[in-house]
Amino acid sequence: MKWLKRTLIILVALGALGYLAYQLVTLLPQFGGEPEGSRLGRVKASPEYSGGRFENTPPQSKNDEFIKTIKFYIQGQVREPASDIPVIDITSYELAQPPDSGLSAIWLGHASVLVEINGVRLLSDPVLSDRVSPLPIGPTRLHRAPIKMEDLRGIDAVLISHDHYDHLDMPTTKALAQKGTQFFVPLGIGAHLERWEVQPEQIHEMEWWQSVDFKGITINCTPARHYSGRKKMDNSTLWSSWFVKGPKNSFYFSGDTGYAPHFREIQNRLGTPNMTLMKVGAYGEPESWNDIHMNPEDAIKAQMDLGAEILLPVHWATFDLAYHAWSEPILRTLEAASGKPVTVATPRVGERFTYGAPFTNMEWYTDL
Image (cartoon, rainbow, N blue to C red; front, side, top):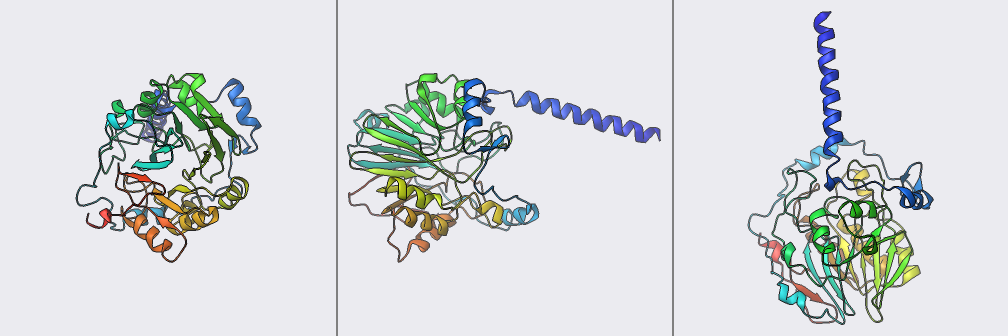
């Protein structure tokens, strides 16, 4: 019995040390902050907040298919390209020029897109770091960023969809904040930004269906179906999509989301955008995963619900985060769009797409 007692003491001690180590590690700034004070009051008063956390309606499915999930992850897919993904570098000189007075977009990889609309320059979910993790382990980029972090300039505003590491990057956020960029974020995420020394006057925390007029355009915070949390998946902050409208042009950024009726509701309330930055990657076969991550076929359904003409696919080809081959999302998106009133634009990373101007898609993803 002595050996059993000794073993139990050792296990308890190891567990206590592990818990203490976890608590200490999560104090690091990259894990962000916690809503407090008046911010916490706003969080608790939100219609999307219930039972101590933000919730989808109906609540998201429980992931009780762990073995099936692992099976899909290791079933022999080609998860990285065999050769370099083509990248067109963006120079600091290009960003020193006035923004496009119409509507144009440059995909920086994953969900990061530089959009110029009616003379305003916006960035969606900017992530220029090489790794999407709070620690020096985890997924690294499949291609280099088309611009160096120190060369970012002239960015009027950032749109953040949620607080996961592949969408909210501390180093990129801090670099932009130091140059005066404004941040439009879902409710609660301001706590992370303030932890990273972003000034309160640069932070605009919004709930679904709220809008802000900014430099002649209107920024609308719109629903999404996802989840949140940086220390743990506790849904402590809100997630969203974004619909930006100018006098003549508009675009929609889906963020991370599952397919749900909110796309049709957005169109009913705000109209049809000219262009979407639509998530097409990071899906899987388990139903619980698809509940919060659209597959390409769902992305095309969402596009048709919105009635938008141009779809620029995002959230693929940059990080190995899901249960499919690296190029599968674009191939399935193009197949799903065939015969439908949807035009899919496939610019290379760093290549400018201008709405209303001639553009030739290059099948750059098929030669890798």
